Length: 138
Image 1 (cartoon, rainbow, N blue to C red):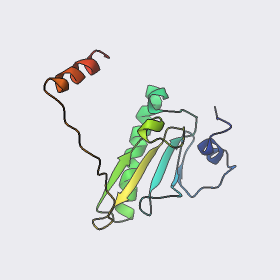
Image 2: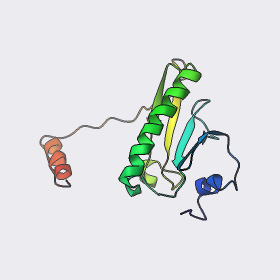
Image 3: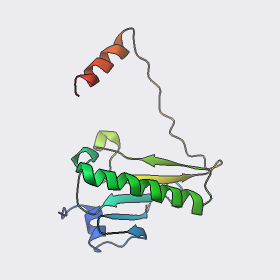
């Protein structure tokens, strides 16, 4: 089901133009209008899901196979030196459009693009404490 306020749902419906590179009955891939590098591609499910964990498991399997396929095509056809796959969830995680999507960013040795975040350190037993908190969620 589409979200009437979602820009990606509007792209799926053809209400907003996009430069499509792939489309089937469940997914759409198109070029990002504000790319990190030229060829930066977004892959979205056509059905609206806000974040990654909202998607049904069976659809996630298909999504991951398509992500692999499109990543290879972007890498090979653009003669990139590498690529990044990025997926953000919730505003604090960097998600700008509230519709689950993956970025495939072609990378070139001289592109100057970095993921250079400030590295943090755990104190004393803190790493073990965080691991225990996460393990309890399973």
